[in-house]
Image 1: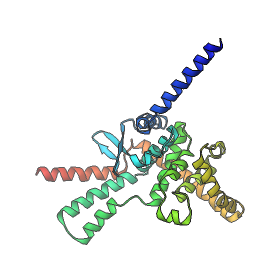
Image 2 (image 1 turned 90 degrees about the vertical axis):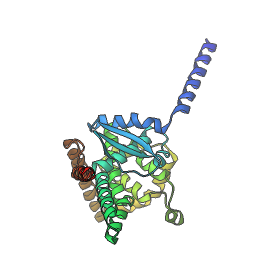
Image 3 (image 1 turned 135 degrees about the horizontal axis):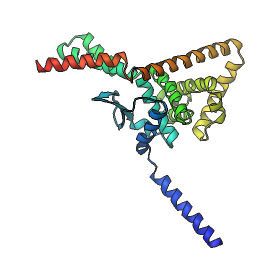
Image 4 (image 1 turned 60 degrees about the vertical axis):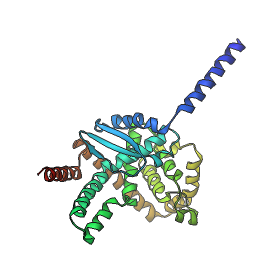
Length: 274
């Protein structure tokens, strides 16, 4: 009997080890992505593609192609963290940030192709610039809303952010990577989903974040005016995120920026054929 139990135990360890060895963040993207789409009732004609360089997500034919940066995905150690990266990219699309960049890029290319003026060059640079910190933070909290409905731990977004490489300024000041964005996510969750924060996230990166954030949290909670302002802002953010997601579902995933891009694309193709 002891021998049988030992054999079964060893088999379990071998199977568990094999499963752990075969887990790969990139392989999990389509599975996790589908879970997020299905649970949130988002358009099913969405394709996820892992890429090396920064690309703007958008429609290719009838499908919405969502590009997942490989560098960000490399910080993921489990499905919750993969979901955090995928949901953030979906957040950019839901907030119409991605399609806005796509339109600016098309306009810039058209102008730059027919003019060498400073205004053309400036517009081209604007369209290709990295997303602003505000755009990133808004996508972060839209993403955690999607994660919660899909059954993933939203605190994983804080973890993936703090796993990223620290900037020179962060290294000099002793801040954790993406401290501002991570704090923005934490505040949003702490007010709107307190049970998720209470449940926690068991990893060292999250513990490091809490140690960094706690003095700020204590200071705010001890000041009635700061606390009242915080509550008002968070309640407003929740309504805005819910409204944006609902609008995205109603339009089938299309925004005004997508319509503009389609018009520009059709005009461009028409011009080429004439």
